[in-house]
Length: 343
Ligand code: COA
Image (cartoon, rainbow, N blue to C red):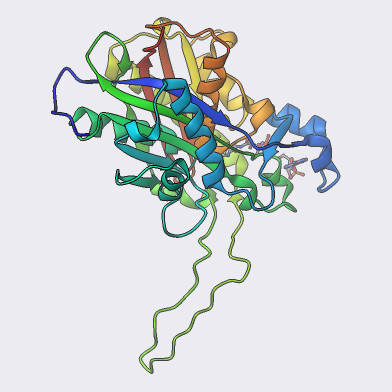
């Protein structure tokens, strides 16, 4: 259902959902696979465990579970939705989009569904994109999901990366409504592609177009997957700098001060990156959501999983100011700000 654009339209979060696959891998199990220790992983990253998909469990499966939970939380059904947007770095297929697979799993029909790719910043990018479309009057209610099976693109023999990632999904139901002083505020997004080689996973698609002699060369890699490659130390340094800048920028864009922020809901890559951002904001540690110990880095799922974690603790109050931020391969980074809309 389309709505007329109105300068008074504000987008609210009406429901929040999450799903984590059952299997949990603790650091000790990793230490039996690669040359690492529980102590090293905890002290350098804050990670204690991660959830991993079962064999045959798809990103779309995780996403559908989280989306259904968000719908239930909002007291709505898929038939009430006007669009479905899925942020993921680990789509199940090149096409169709994982969003379309999730729509089908939920029993939805006809409304638009599409994926967005901004790696770990996917949910933050998605929130900004969808909010703009809703404020323009295109949609009244949208399901926004972040879902990842990062374990499928990790090299499990590379200790530099395999200790860092996990799988999961988080989702929100967004609804356009009246300006009652709550809801999404201005977002800030950035990308600098010159950093791309510091953190990447090359594409598995290696087919060639037909040659002039009409002989088709299809050299698709049977394994189909290229693992994450990362220069962690350099990523760390840029992440801390850019996140420090972007939180200042989003506060300025919304005319708020550091002392106004009630909750920091950061992308969960490394506890030391989170702590650096909280310090820049003069924010007490207990006002920052930390799930990295239990979830590790779930890429586009990390921010909605952290939001769900805060929400289910029952500590969120209507009108409280939340700052969401993320940093990702690309590099792509950004931040959203909102006043919590629910009682
Ligand atoms: N276990 C034990 N040792 C490990 C290890 C592991 N799992 N991974 C790396 N090491 C070793 C390195 O080989 C290196 O050894 P060396 O000094 O003999 O060469 C040593 O630990 C220090 O490596 P360094 O990269 O300097 O460590 P670090 O303090 O920077 O921590 C990261 C590494 C990856 C945890 C950290 O850089 C990080 O979190 N970076 C950001 C990653 C990130 O956020 N990526 C996603 C962004 S969305």
